[in-house]
Image (cartoon, rainbow, N blue to C red; front, side, top):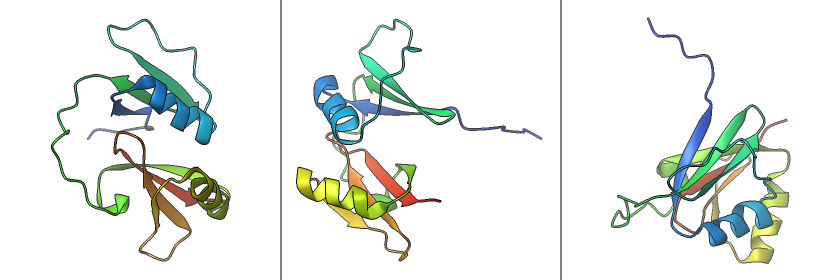
Length: 124
């Protein structure tokens, strides 16, 4: 039997690294990792706890895909946050569209500038 010990990273395809960095660093407050080696494509890595988020500027095979309106019904990355209402307020101020969790729990979903679905879920 295979034993998986932990999830290491999640990779997301982005088209404009400047726009993506403005979202992930400027709005979400992530700090770039210096662990990313020199690769044949643009990108940035972020350390989030023991995991990483990798943004990759590569050809996107999903450009013609129609995504569900609610990000929770699409492939998505979930981030643990202390206060979902703080995220909601920041998104309202930035004009970022989002939807609240349909399960009634303290979580909200949005899409990054490239349409990648993100979840912010209250975990204490």
